[in-house]
Length: 351
Image (cartoon, rainbow, N blue to C red; front, side):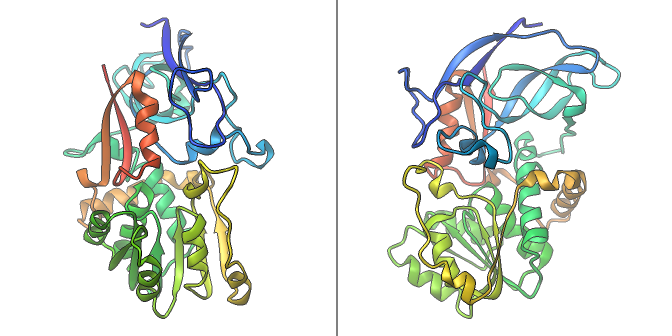
């Protein structure tokens, strides 16, 4: 068994775009750390797949108030936080969790890690399905999408729904759940390229519009004629501001993320149309998937069943898998912010 592990630590907290180089200002640094032997309640894990999530950017920001965060910020010198699919390579209790078991756990950006068995969720692979989907459609991403659209926004079959970031990991699941499980009368996606828009329409949206188009604002007005009851917001910033003017009276906005500002915290994009919230009595509800974690097994069962019944698309198009050497983990993670991924961005570690 290994006696030490490679790990990427947080070297400097960024306020803007993370710095990936070998300078003293680099955001991350590759180091090694001792690996203790597991106790009778622990296992040693080898990381196989890493989840890449925009929320990770907020955990390392230089200018956040720790008291306002839903999780403690990662301190400089600590391993970068991440969830992963891992293999048990040594077990303190082989009867409870044998060697070779695949689990979902918080391992951080570590090659090997020691975790409590109770904190590891056993993954049973589905025939013909990539393991990466247990980080995406059948993981926290699917849970986030389901919770946000059903419980937070309380979408119904009578609603028109707009989803920003519709070609991303969460947005693409929201589109499908809204249209194919809830049966919303109209689902409108927003994505960053024409190709992504066509893909979003293919998986279930009635229409998808390109926010980089010079006619985006006009296209949005046309697509939301008559206004909309529900907006699922993954991006914040200018698109959220525009959507204030497209909401029906007493409309509901589920706020999942604000990726437009994650690397721009020194000069965040503000909101100009907030009076619409007052005049049209718009309900805005921010949420964190951890609030719904007690429902994870039930929701995953619902989503797997929907996939098996042909209601949901869960295939290669729903994830962007990047085979990555351990030394290149930060570079793959940064793809979250350049718009290059469709669906879930997953890091598959290779030797």
